[in-house]
Image 1 (cartoon, rainbow, N blue to C red):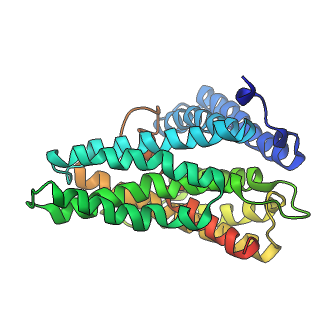
Image 2 (cartoon, rainbow, N blue to C red):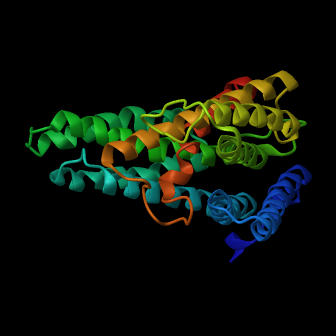
Length: 319
């Protein structure tokens, strides 16, 4: 039961502040959309209300992963990667039936990758999947002796592993970063910072796009994405990154740069999954989260913002 006890880092005032901000925003949004729904119901408002309910679910998951014992947090992120990989592999039309058995090696890589992150073994962590698994998976495919479309399988399986496991594991590794003198929030603060900025960027790109969107940015891939939504989210996220920098060791200039790059990389992750769904012919990758579809629909942006943010903070303050 000790693993379910609140971690000592929950006593950190910076972490408590951002948790309070997240819950405050969700409460405000819930009340606002409820009142507006009584005054002037509409399809767009119903969509926002549905998404708000889903944001409550996602916020609860990440807050609990932050304040509970580190082992619980790493297990939670590992399960998130497992669910995302399973979802992506199940909808993919580019994987041959005979390759499904090879997926076992991808699933086995998950506990290894998170074990490396938990122990803070950085040098092995960054090469295990991009190097070792990128060699092992093609080798296993070759020894199976079926060469028809093997080149496609060699590309698809490692890419799925990178997108759902390697990328997301950087969120967990933030919890293993060493302490910096004078920086009280630590890895918990960094985790909440990047997750909050990523999610709020999605929220504001969606909201600004609904309110002001006129000019399509990449219509063939994601027809709902507009320049107004993208720029609105970019500006909002960059400003918030500046004001929330107390969760990080960033200087003022660094926080603006990081906020800008998180917003841009979040957009990239979103349209990558949109392109995959369009290729497959799906609106959502699943139905697990009401209003948001599947796991991938919710972590698509994080798959790119997590490693982007991690290597920024690591090279700026931990090398």
